[in-house]
Image 1: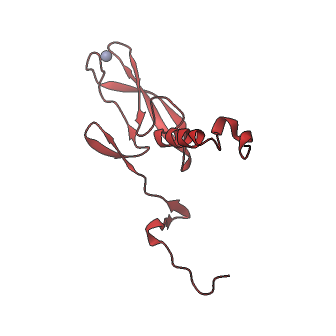
Image 2 (image 1 turned 90 degrees about the horizontal axis):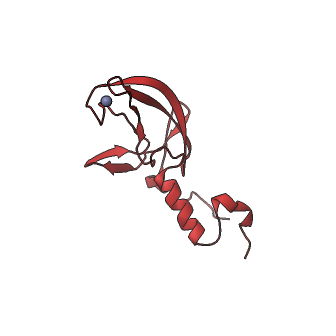
Image 3 (image 1 turned 180 degrees about the vertical axis):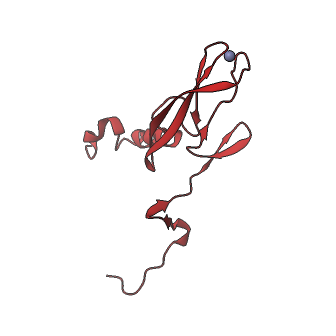
Length: 127
Ligand SMILES: [Zn+2]
């Protein structure tokens, strides 16, 4: 048993606000701008005809990440002129996937190591 206080790594300190732990998220570069991961990015104009988009519906997406499951409210958009549909982008999440890039990369690197796999976790510990 170590006696006395252990040195604390203060660089890993987390802040508690209103009973919640606040974790700073990494920034992701998108088209020459940095956005915080899981930032919701809304289209404003139609890709095809350039008309202003209108709100079609709201939806909550659940994203698997190494920080846990993230719930984000997103919006679906409609172009009244050409009836095309658009949806919000979540920074750090590929398209309409339900996992983040960093989660996918972590999964792949663990899998290649041959010890664990998310889709086949029963095999953990087998040699
Ligand atoms: Zn349009």
